[in-house]
Structures are given as structure tokens and as C-alpha cells.
Image (cartoon, rainbow, N blue to C red; front, side):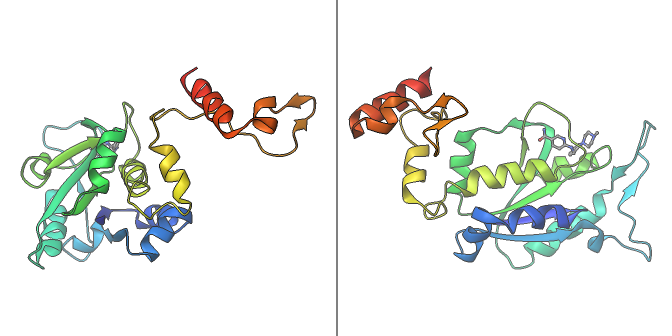
Length: 214
Ligand code: 4H7
């Protein structure tokens, strides 16, 4: 997976991506993420990225120009890219979509909006796909982009350290998980189910499936 992220708050993105599983995926070159500050593509001495919307209304909107310039800059290498906007209007993100993106060979550009949103001409002429992380409003698109990248990248073969966790995740109980227990076998009077302590592999497997579907 190859991603370019356009944001006004690059630190939010790097803070999350430079930890744990996603950090390792990048080290293994299974995931490549480049983060760009939209402000670096704004013109003028003050590098203004937002403006009042035509027709009034509360708040500011990200201007079209810096976003077009940023995408133009990325496309200078002649490589085709799919431009994705994270927005509450987008198509709801699902595990199926994550699987699709994990196999995507085209480079992906994620645009993270802020303020009241972005100039509609960006959505209309620059954006190929609009995705929503869920039916709620966020302060910015950064959290939504991280959700989409996190859920997708962990499905790239080789990303999860333990091959078994990838296998178990894609197992027949689908998105459902079963309860997990760690030592001690009894904690403040609460016991680990007997089958997990003394059961054989098949019994444990049946118990987990039953619990996942409960
Ligand atoms: C694009 C357009 C994604 C991005 C508008 C982004 C929820 C999601 C944003 C907006 C997002 C999601 C700006 C409209 C903030 C609302 C208060 C950024 N919110 N916003 N306004 N569900 N916000 O994926």
C-alpha cells in the first residue's frame, strides 16, 4: 500500500503511524506513507489555506488552490493516483473496503479536510472516491484517514507479526472475536472457563466459535 496524505496537521498522522504494527509495516516496505502539509502548497507570503465561503455561513473552508497544487505536485512523477477524500458524506467504510485497499496497487492520496470542509471544486474534479469512517462528524479528516489506513494495512500479508493472528482474524467467525483470558486462572474470584485450561484443541476451537457467535 502506497499512501500520500494531505493534511494541515501532519504530526497527528505521523504520531500514530510511527508506532507498533504500522511502523513495522513501513519498515518492511509493505506500507509506504508520505505526509504533506497542505500549507506548503499555499501561495503568498502568509500561506493562507482557508477562506470565507461564498454565500456566507459559519466558519472557514479550505481553498481549492493549495489542494490542486498539492495533487499536481504528487502527480509530477507521472504515476497515476487514486484521490480519496475522507468526509461524512462519503461511502461508509467497511472491512470489505479495507480488504480492497490492502490489495490496491495504485498509489492513494488521502485528503484530510478541516474547518467547515473543502471547496466543492476539489470534491468534484480532483477526488476519485469519497469515504466516510462512520456516521459521525469529526473535527478533521485525519482520524478518518488513520482508521482507513490502519484497518487496510493490517490486512497486507506479512504486516501482522504473528502469522496466526492474521489467520484467526480472517477466520470463519468473520469480524466477531471471542473472549480472551490471561493468567492468573482465577482473578478476584473470577475464573477462566474450564475448557480453556484443560480442554483439547478441538474443544477450545468449538468454545471460541460458540462465544464469537453468541
Ligand atoms: C471533509 C469535509 C470525515 C472533511 C467536511 C471527516 C467526519 C468524517 C471534513 C469535513 C470529517 C468521517 C469538517 C465537516 C468539520 C464538519 C464540522 C472533516 N468528519 N467536516 N465540520 N465520518 N471532518 O469519516
